[in-house]
Length: 436
Image (cartoon, rainbow, N blue to C red):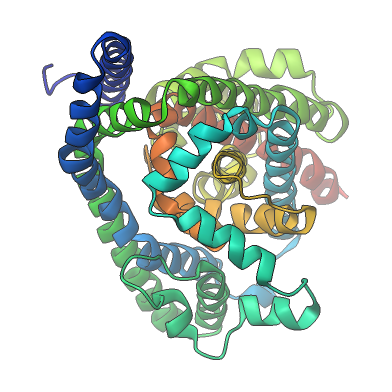
């Protein structure tokens, strides 16, 4: 296939090719088992290591990307004690928007439970495929003490910070929770520095984030070849059950994304912005199409500003403040997706996340979504970190890689749509105050 074909299209074609080839292999294996065994051996010896090259490139950037992106996001706020009503309203709505999105996603995954549709035999094969990491995680969860204030403090603020997020094994990702706390503290401390020093700190963090994003870009160049290799390997070893649970996951995740955009945001428009949801979404339809086609919140910022000014008649000062911040911080679709993936993969491995764990997941999904680069595939390293945090083998992200590009377009649409709705709500709330 020509390299001029868009990356998303090549990945989707790779997924189709991998699935068709795997199903054909399974079908032929019914009549000639030796062929199936040979292809399973080839998958283990050749395809799995190739897929691991792609995954490991993502794992490499988890720690520096989380730290740099989150610390920079806090540092760019400037002096925290000087934030006015406009900023406080904006950040409050951003947080509420993302928390509601994650809650909807987790509720959908708990209702559908796509990972639980995996047969026990297939789940056992999946656990075996990932080196018993899932079984060890289940054992650790059974042995760990119940959550208490002391345990929570230890989870987020261990004595050995670097030892916690570096990890004690070359085959395991470190703990991301203490890193998130440290990044927020660094960013908050940077806001108290003189402006020239704060700017130097932020520039350094942004440079590091851009470097890590570049490595993600290198990894994504392998995706059209790694995705079919990994999906083929999983299906020929585990069976077509993986396709069933994957289809349920995609439908559930897509439904949750659309429910948040056209449900939650419609309520915000009606009751907070005092606008007609139907008329509003008709006005921003070109923007939503742009977001869906580009899969990049950052690329949609010029279009968002134009729609806010020309179609919605929002205050230039409000739109100029809310929309650029939203393009980097208000990632409700991404947060929703991250929560769905972690819960789905945990279900597939037979790892149960309690209500308390899911509440922690909501918070972490919001924080990690803020740290996501506004580019296609930018959330993959962060999701791997979240999986490791909850004792789920991060390699499990390979199950959803093939459909990530489809859902990436949807969650970007939700991200951008939520930004413009938030701008409309803030504009409605600030204008009367300004007039008074």
